[in-house]
Structures are given as structure tokens and as C-alpha cells.
Length: 129
Image 1 (cartoon, rainbow, N blue to C red):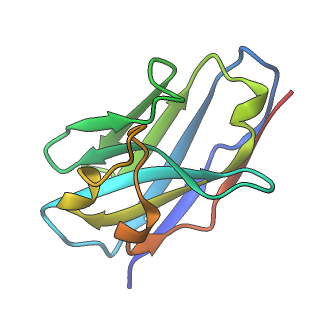
Image 2 (image 1 turned 90 degrees about the vertical axis):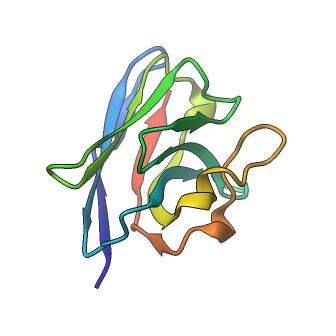
């Protein structure tokens, strides 16, 4: 049974930072892609960052240079460090897991595509004012 549980969301002023965590259990693939997505009110879900089992990372243009995705294999935890936060970053943030190739299937603005991910967490809210 695969389970992803996010934490670390909250309210922060513009320019501030937050670090999101995603605890992963039951996912046994040796080759994988892990991603962070966000859903803002009235908008479609957007993939913001991905990391594969080799440690290769990918960022959407909208967060490049401000967000950093990382993983702790020993503790089965995925992270998203978010710096220089803007009001437009306000959204529900979710982590997701999929096969390795999911990290290569991106849009023209380098957003991950949610249909290539199979397992999802419930999300954690980030509000930037």
C-alpha cells in the first residue's frame, strides 16, 4: 500500500521561505520520479519540480531559481525548499510518485504532467501574502 503524506505548509509573507516534506511508504520501485505539484484556486494543477531516482532534477520556469527539490533516501522523504515566495505561489501543494520517465514528460515550460504520476498525497496548503 503506497502512501504519501505531506507536511510543512503554512502562511508566510512574500519573500519568505518554507520547506515542504513528503513522507513516502510502500513504494518499492528502484527507478522512479517524484514530483511536487500545486493547485491554486480556480486553476489547473501545475507540476513545479521533479527528481528522479538518479538525483536528476527538473523545475518549471515559474519556480526555477527559487525552489529546490531534494530527497532523503534513507528516510524515504521528499522535500521542497521554497525561497523568495510570491503571492502567486499560494496553492495546495501535493507530492506524487511515478515511473522514471515521468520526469522527462514535461510541457514547454518544463512543468511535470500529472497524468504520468500514479500515487498522490493529500496535500499541504501554502499561503503567501
